[in-house]
Length: 315
Length: 314
Image (cartoon, rainbow over all chains, first blue to last red; front, top):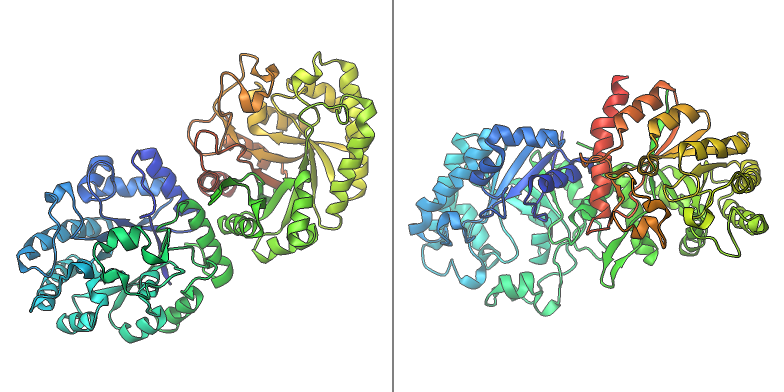
């Protein structure tokens, strides 16, 4: 049976009742699991295990809260070691820097332990900083990235959790043959990949072709659509987070990600899902409202597309 | 055994590059709105009579629109609603001279939906309270005559004329409701239970359903947090939109702060073996920064996890 979840990264609930409404939206749209994203501090109370514990008492308390809202559990947690967080002293870390390895492994362990305690199964991690920061320019950088994530993957495996590296369209792994080199340098038993359909499409990559090429390493899937590829490689220009991801670059994109069947979408979502089915993919399929100004509306529309066009059953 | 299905009453606002708009802003907005409702699991769609011409323009006809909503996974248009909130010299239910015009309006709505299986012709039987007061037996009689006439006409086309009473209308108390329903012909005029409107007026909707379940043809399931104890209902210019003491009267089911006892109503519906469409209404959900999509999901969650459970346990 396929496993479906919904990423709640487009919402920003703070108070408990706002968390409750968000979860009920996801539940009412037919999704039984959620994917959380890392954050920092009191404004992102679901962004770190410590804050979840402060808000809900314990992993078990959080599970109880989810159940009250019709949610069965947490599928996965997205972790970016480069994110500035007060809990990490506002120090951005890079797996390409061997000096950051221990700290990354320790922080990843927090998310891993939380998932293990709560019955979740995948740590989704941003493997490197963005290309414009040139994290892989130094000789030996790929090796350092590989050792870091293998260490995270080994810890996760011992806790019954899977590591999935998430390549976004700003990633340094998008450039040259960096991704192949990293995959060659890592143990497939420890390091898997998360395939994000829209991130790949913005990177001018066909998700189906990508999946066929890397099928053995894909252990997690995130599904959304986009209307615009970064065909002029603006991801490599300085401050791409600000100028491209948020500012839209020379394309003028107000938002990069859209509903699954958006008009002019570059991702053939139904075709991609058919490919997953045909190959027996059994990992999570996480749908997103990312970048939507109306996460609930997008969740409703995505639900309709999956149920009535693709033929997916409600969770 | 009750055969119950859920429909959605056509209230929706979404943001656009031009600011907040309704679904009739453009075809793409309407398509997406219907798909969202279908995605949430609603089977029926209730709309307003005055929106039918715009829908027909957008889809070619109301019948073609119904074909579209079926393609999206919904079943059909279940009800059409009409109202005359303010008395004018052209239309006022308590003024007999305007009845021909109102009947003509209603006939237009019925004809636009001919053959589509629409079940309810939902009417707000009066204008505002302050337009009508003093509410006299004679005015209620004139009003009842209008809806008897409309009801006979709509029933011939397969739709039941069913009266939806506002807390700010001229028929709001238990005594007024009883008088009006006695004055109308039960063959032609039915009762539609709006849970929040009755509650605001200080009338228990469960008790009212128990009393009139034989004439009840549908519900608006919506909640409120306020009973009108300060005669807001008779306050011009508009007690629903501009009451001095209450900014937002209506809330979706499931907020935990509402006054309507939905479980009791569901148990009563099941005990009476009542069958038909139960309608979620999110009237003015955007007041104070609310969000129709989120409210729709919260209400549907409440159906799935609370009301359906009562049904399953019965």
